[in-house]
Amino acid sequence: MVFLVVFSFFISAIAAFVVIRLARRHARQYAHDLPQRFHLGHIPRIGGLGIFFGLVIAWAYAGTPQAASLNVDWRANSTFLWLMAMCMAPAVFAGIAEDMTQRLRARLRLGLTALSAILLCWLLNLGVRRIGFAPLDDWLQAAPLAAAIFAMVAIAGLPHAFNLIDGYNGLAGMVAILISLALIHVALQVGDRQLAAMLACLVGATGGFLLWNYPYGKIFAGDGGAYVWGLVIAVACVLLVQRHPTVSPWFPMLLLMYPVGETLFSIYRKLARGQSPSTADALHLHQLIFRRIVRVVFEDDEASDLLARNNRTSPYLWIFSLLTVVPAVMFWSNTPVLAAFCVLFVVTYVGAYLMIIRFKVPRWLGK
Image (cartoon, rainbow, N blue to C red; front, side, top):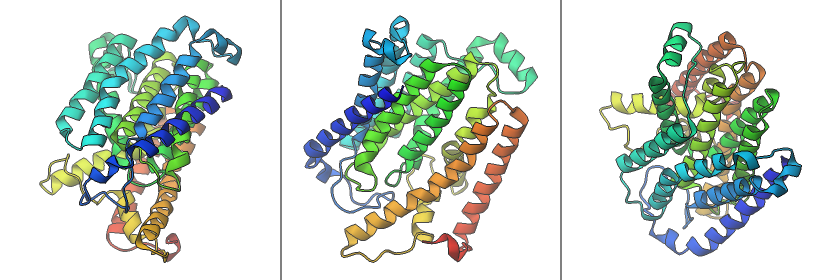
């Protein structure tokens, strides 16, 4: 399995390097007045192409006879991987098209991610049949269409959640790796090596992208990269709970509380202000941390200063994400404890947000 991580890492890193060299001139066409822009210079944001390429190539290798020595024999089930890649394609390439043109409407991208979710649920027979509440679980098991709809909503929504937190070098990519490693750990605990290997390829492909993204900021993941992370992780979460009754359905809920919670709070915040949820702004938690916690860095020029502050922002959110990842891994089969940690995270998130927005941050948090 380690070989798959290394293999996908190098494929993704090489693909990202090629993208950096070929798309540098195209990056000059990106808008300079977007509220979520926190860098200077012309940086390609189609790193998702390299992540997807490294992931699919690694999956393709895992389905060959040569991969049998890895103790992850996918030859009998290689169709699953190809179906995954094909079903993901509409959403991923829509994201890449937006990254290149900046002209795809949010509704179109949402529709194409929904299409990918529908195809994944239909062709892979995915469904959310347990949520930890007995009466509702009985209804979901008796109504497979409702279970499939629950799965479709989750799979279609998570890519946009990752896109929302993808604001600084290494932020969303490292969160995706942390979540994937947690899923791999639990998958191995229940003996699901195929699912673990599928996620190991994602970890390697993301690592190859991060080689250029953090701390150098040579390339960004863009919508395409966020959609890859969201789709693969969402499918893995549904499969893990669907295949293994010992895994609590609240395990993936707690694991994904940071990106999902950020998204839901953002929607609430914008609706409360009379704005459309699709309107971009600069009031997300990571943006507030950048402005109000990370101290000014005195570099030789403005671009270097922004890059240094950009890189210092992400570790705050990595630690914040660990507040859900660590307890989720520790109590992956204990529904009451997982649910309690979900409530605790919501309280912590809202408290931290209000503390920052009201300028009541302790001095020791700044660096």
